Image (tube, rainbow, N blue to C red; front, side):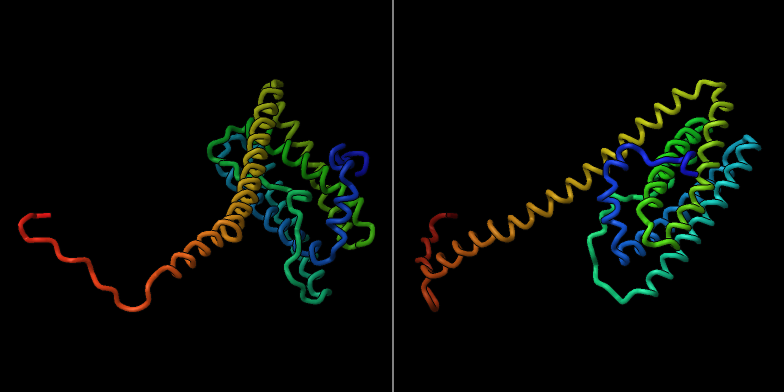
Length: 248
């Protein structure tokens, strides 16, 4: 498997950070449970794709792929729960999901709006990115053999997913598979940009709210207190009534 799927150059450069992310046992267990949710979502989307496609071979392959995703979800869920039972209760910690995202499934892709070639291209790129990350996670989990075995099991299926999506894309696209792959790459880049923009907007929004609360609001409170000191205490006489000769 090490010769079939290798981590990407970018992930290899960040290997020390990935090792730090997976070193914490509580974070490791929660990430495994999150992977289980993602795999299950991907399996449901693939079942929907099998319902929609008119290609009988793709229908069988999608169903086989969906079975693999559900099995991966069960493996991740079982290992995550077992790890949590071995650990004491712990508070919320920094998850670093942007650094070790795992697999994003179909990444909120509208399966009903996709053709067979575009869906296969997206699946191929998504599975390749996930397999490369899982290969790196397997390398940094030498201190946890049970969790490492889960990733080794998953990687065997990921190699098959990479092979069938590439082969079927070439068949469906009549050999012209580059165009669907480039469109899928651009779509993934756009969604990555949207995720980064949303994360940046969340950080800036939190920063601005804290500035308003700790900097601007105290200034208004101080001005209100100074104005209150100038107010007279008790009832005050109202202004003299205007003559009733005018509507004003």
